[in-house]
Length: 503
Image 1 (spheres, rainbow, N blue to C red):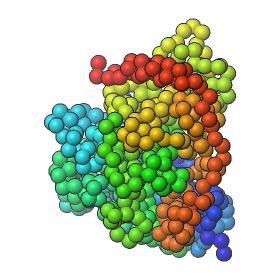
Image 2: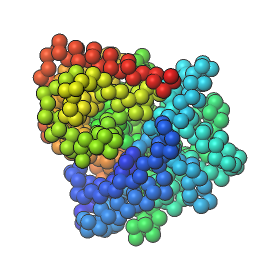
Image 3: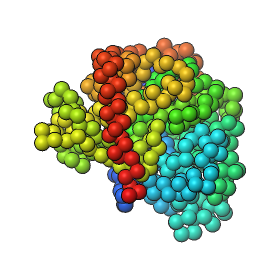
Image 4: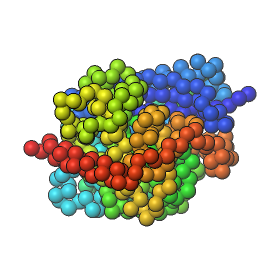
């Protein structure tokens, strides 16, 4: 009987379920979008109940479509949008407030106050993170302070906090397991990445009671079994990882110095730094890549990474579709952008939720500059693709400087990596080859790999590395002078978007 890993890929705009066979091939996919809520400027919320309903629905749908029985599922793996914050009632299993999404900027002022109080350096030393509203710590503090009675209830152990992985495990196990893995914990501002423990000083700083927190477990290891009623029989849950760490694992970036970039709602570049938690000098993040496999959390089994975060990648194309209406479907952007040879000196800075690496400006806002009467929607579409690539090029340069390694290639994945024009533009702006693998579902694949290593579905990293294969390589075609001129002009455009919301 053929067996599979069922990977649940819970993203920012949709929930997906993907079945992988032993060769790492996709055997079936189901996907369902869910609603985005924008109650105030800079606020982004999700309905955690709707996330669970959509994730459960696609898991059942992919099994139905493929005819795969629950008995054929070796294990379940979970990968997730990371910093999104859920607070729920342990007794009822229901959220006490909307989930605050990673893109949400409502706590930027709180971060500024902590920075003014001289806390940023201490936070970075312990967590590897810059002090920004992007992460979960200030989001959780906001919920505890603003939801009536939440803080007292959390202190009594009546409420549970988690990122989306924790929420899904809770729901899958019928409330029997409240856990997160080290890669997700490392995105909260509450977790010491050197000791792999919740940090008492940080909990005090953010006024978070330890009773509300999940237990931290390895990324690869069995953490529980599903409620038998969900799939007709219990299925073990054996892999957990934040989406970008999972994609790095799925790209077989197992050796220090290997890097990948995922083009999703945002753009996230990670480079494996091995057992060393490299501290950045250019505002990159130092993060836990994964821990395991193993039954318990051990620092000796931790792999670290440097990360650069671009907040608006696929979200930029969605804005062209939903905000401006200049395309009817996301895939139309490539053909439209090909209608012009260049942007006509038009630059789009998609700082809709601020700017991430290397600027970390929560008060930046989107800017479209350089327009003339000759500017067309094709120029704007091409500027949008260039903006994705230029933001990633900024991260790539910072990563090379911090690591001291001249990166030789960039492995790419995510939905927008299928856009050939964008990938060529990316290679041109980086000056190194961009390599797209045959399997671009690397986020879900990485989570599946972590689960399969824990259960013996796969023998080890060598077997996984042998499954990785390139589909296409994009080589740079732009001259060095032209590349540098483009980068300088981009820097000018970014400066016009900086600090806008404070004026």
